[in-house]
Image (cartoon, rainbow, N blue to C red; front, side, top):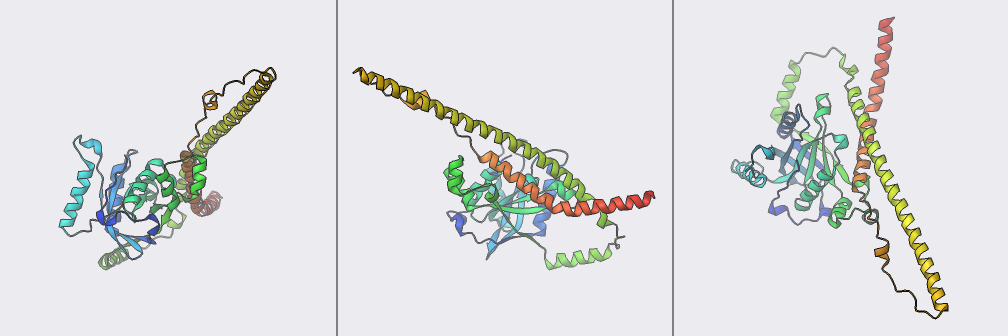
Length: 338
């Protein structure tokens, strides 16, 4: 389900290089709404949950104070997404709640969040609302005990690439864009009110002390296994794209050789006709004889390379602690058997 974008007039026509957002501050209430919506939407199926982020820009931070979900468009044939979002923001404004649109959120595997649809949606957001971010929430990793909430923005190079709408190798080289600078991560800070912090402190005192066994929890092992499987799939896909590009390069070289041989042959024939005082052969359009081979777009392979890089970074985060826990558990198991 593609996310549509709506924006406020006060935020339009801002240059993408003027952003001074250094971090994202999100209220605990908005986090709980996102968590509740994503887990309800994604439970038992592969659907993606999406919604709008509301807030405002204060100095060097983007404050997200509220949010609301995007319902499934196929639930009602007469449902209008644009009218729904405008109606929601009007109602929030009536009750004196921040109603300025500052981005959107989506449930996704954070390691492989990069996709052409996400880039297109974020491009439209950032060219309309310069400060906007996309907030990604990983339901599977959070269900294993690792809260994963990350904010991303497109880099100026990626925005320039989408404006030119050219994804050939030459265009990407001119824009100086690669998989490593398609998106940039913005730090996320969760903020709670003082009353909420007091309540959490009281609840923590009511919880009985832990027995000291949670440090050996092997939840990271399942996360690591899933990410390794996804990494292998992305590497296989990237290898197939590399094979296609190598085949394209071979076709270009073969066509260039055929064109060179053809031109050399015509030059010999014209030389022989000139020796016989005959007129040279008429000029022919080389593009009709040798049709240019269309250049393969490089956006999809670049996204796959970005996914491989993201999975590698996440695996490195879990690898050391997972291996340490596994070795400890192995030692404990041997002692138990003895």
